[in-house]
Image (cartoon, rainbow, N blue to C red):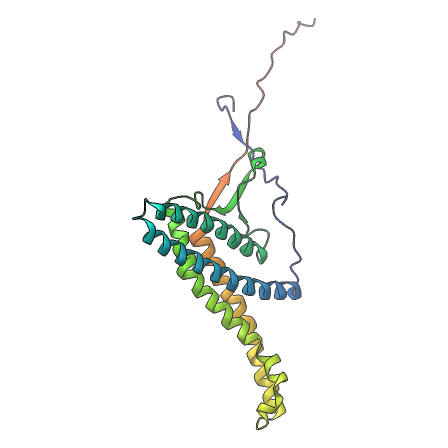
Length: 229
């Protein structure tokens, strides 16, 4: 089109350079989920303590030459750092099509790219930062409780096998069936709780973005042509 200055180039040329290619086998993903829940519990504890201590201390110190504002500012900086760790934990069990970019790569200007990224200004005085602080204080704690339950269910079989004398009145077949049932429930609940935790991360910490590549078509060049007889 001559009257169009730019035309969109439907390129998805990143080729997955910014997305870690991971083994998605069932066994590998199972151990990734176990590590996800362990780290999720630790991250939730760190987030809850950081927000609680930081804001309580900050509010109490505001009358002292506004020292409390400095403490709150430091707390919000830590909130941004914890949000980055939470995004990394999200990516640890994500597919390559469901990836959170901590920052949009500068090279993305040369090709089309869309997906999820961490919300900006999470380390400063902003509504997004306080929103994530609430998430780390309350929602993440609930997600950690679900992770604890899923790991406890998963550990039912080893505990039963290690303390066989405590179940003398239960037949071996019943014990095996109960252990298998608890293990299956634990695996299912582990996947479900991971889904809920990742959904919470997307909702509270992330936003969608899209970058489109444009190309400028070269203008036609006109040459004089001699008439041929």
